[in-house]
Image 1: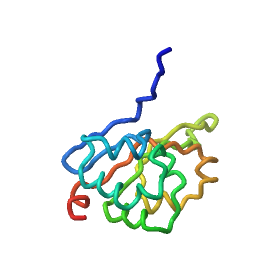
Image 2: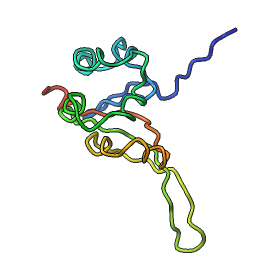
Image 3: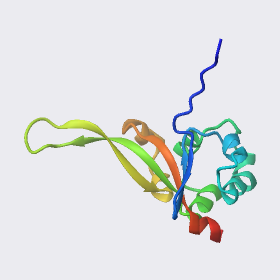
Image 4: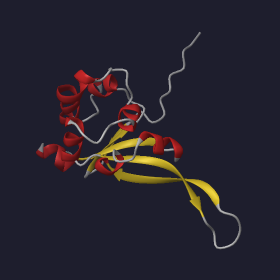
Length: 139
């Protein structure tokens, strides 16, 4: 029997300004991935990896991350943002309101202020993690 592995949302992309990481990566996969920036892997390995199960996905970790702690300070320092899909009510000019997924990019300090219960209620799904290359370089 061939085991299927979920590979969607497991990617590392970079442009001139930012690094984009798919949210389905586990911490272990990010730390071992040569495509991920060295400083980002080092930051995870030195400051966060000890306190997290290596099989934890970035999505799970950021979903339940609290407002306080070293991790949030570090992520704020590298200007980390979270790209999310969220269910919102759309009110057209005519007709009934409808519920639709909307994609938003939210800074980490704003995202961690939302309690997990509210995230579940709004149907928040983390799609990717973004961080500034310049802030990462300066770290």
